[in-house]
Length: 205
Image (cartoon, rainbow, N blue to C red; front, side, top):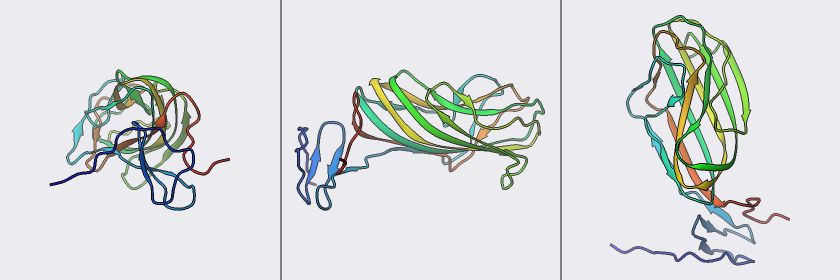
């Protein structure tokens, strides 16, 4: 079995149509004109079975794992988390954020949260624009024993020091019964360039 291995090099100042490049952080292709684009090389994690959380009011892992990120790299990411519980009536909000050992230059993402007593009907929903990895509430308060929450996130993060990056959620109070992350929940992340300046890929001027 053969493979093609590209050596990391500086991107050409003017890309050529049909060209594939690698700068040590990301792969790029130029489909037409000078419209160089990122070839998405996503690290992806999807639950195939329920992951049971804890009945606590501190940050906890959404999927039970974290991803390892590299130094001096900017990443784009997205995720959808579906949470459910069947016990506990202490009022609480549900929030989202990130933990891990990676050190960040900056982060910016949008999170939309839906919470209700049915998986199909959301009675409380909120939107959050976050510029910190610290877990922050993204739903209104709910106190139903049977509850569902869906969190959708999308954004970018600039990493200064490589390490783990862990998708998390946080409850404002221990509800009396733990949430479980439902099968089908996922998180993906991929590099889009080197950190330290604006990320510009393509024919921008």
